[in-house]
Image 1 (cartoon, helix red, strand yellow):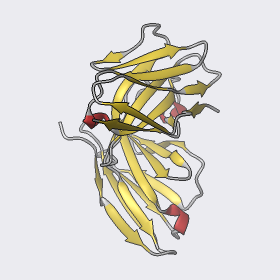
Image 2 (image 1 turned 120 degrees about the horizontal axis):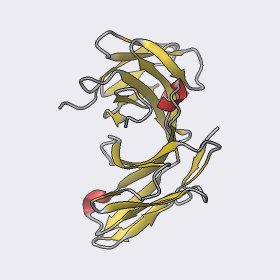
Image 3 (image 1 turned 180 degrees about the horizontal axis):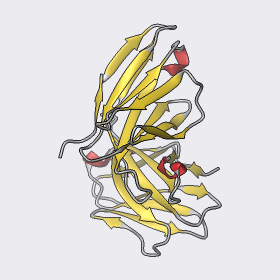
Image 4 (image 1 turned 30 degrees about the vertical axis):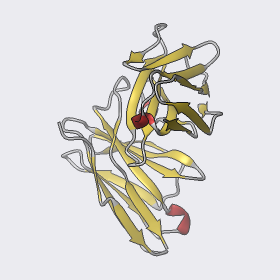
Amino acid sequence: AQTVTQSQPEMSVQEAETVTLSCTYDTSESDYYLFWYKQPPSRQMILVIRQEAYKQQNATENRFSVNFQKAAKSFSLKISDSQLGDAAMYFCAYRSRRNTGTASKLTFGTGTRLQVTL
Amino acid sequence: KAGVTQTPRYLIKTRGQQVTLSCSPISGHRSVSWYQQTPGQGLQFLFEYFSETQRNKGNFPGRFSGRQFSNSRSEMNVSTLELGDSALYLCASSFGQPTDTQYFGPGTRLTVL
């Protein structure tokens, strides 16, 4: 079974600064997806970024980028130029890419609460 | 394009009752997955429906069940409610292929008294 670990329960960053959230995972599979989801106080889960394991290039989405280290099973999220609206709970998630029913299941980490201060 | 919608948004029930939650996926999406979110257990996968068939199931007791209709809308039912069922229930939809991203609804907050 796959597991996802987020070892930072809380992080704080000043507005306009950069912060990195950590995530490690364990799997015996070679083909999978990794995600970062953001959950603001409204509780709506919002996709931030997605990484395909077979791609060596790290995914980027505007101010959000990842550092994907497949051999180390590490998947960190970097937020640049932090904004007040970035304050939320961030979840790292894993999903298999196999073409079976199990591919639909997302396995989540426990989350990191990000505070953004002025 | 409208997002995933869930109804009701809030629900209060008492122990022993049953409850039905509804999820309407994004237009064109055929897969609906359900997750339970609690402070103690975090986010856990309940089950997934695709084309009206349960395709995947998490490790929850039989009190938790679901179904999907021909228009891809899904319902989740919890019978004989327990205090521990108090949670945020999230549904997510996608086209249903392993390459697809799942998009989440706003959730239903269930409180069991």
